[in-house]
Length: 325
Image (tube, rainbow, N blue to C red):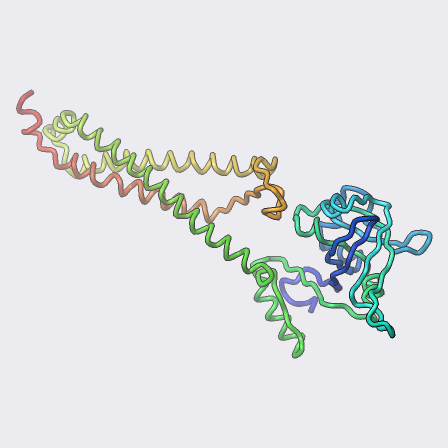
């Protein structure tokens, strides 16, 4: 599977929902068992530590290590070096029923992935520790595949499923977040309509300005036509004026927008509540394709707005304008 085009890395993993206890505090978390070296190379979460280290080695008493998220550590009032208890519902069957299985862990480090769901609900241990807590043998829950291009995830998933054969299933990041992407698609549509309305209003402004220019310069236009200027030439003058105004405004708007997007993304100027939006700030990603269609739409609306005043200027009759001069 590692030879599949587009695949960057493959890491085994175990997922389990456990109870994290520390003193009077307790809450459920998602525990992920990982291969430390593979996970450290593939995931940025274990490379962005705010306290402790990403060393998964056991301490002198043989107690295994645990890495937790920043918000989880703040909520549980724990810090690097503290000892906690993890309890798995997949316990031991006894004459008294199913008893949960508990293990002590040392908080080796606290990570900050930038994604609230990870930082508030996730913990990382080694594969061996996760297998021991769950009471399973040398097996894993799944294989995580990281791809070079996120948009190719569905195609690569189909290719891997064909190679794996029957009895296996695949799930992509788009499948896991389908509801979120439906909401984002709706927001993108609303944003496009909003930008289109703004551009339409700007086109109306160009129409008004050119119409007023034709009315104010009617005498000058009549003089030009009396001196031999043709209607087509007068029409081109106003169309070119509208094109120049719209092109200059579009270029300035693109420059201003991309500059603001770069600054806002670099310095995180628009903070968000991570408990509501899952991220701590509004990220900006400048897309060249968006600039092309926005510029094309702006120029098309602006050029269309020049047609009416240009035709009005071309229909001026010099005799009617100059007969009282």
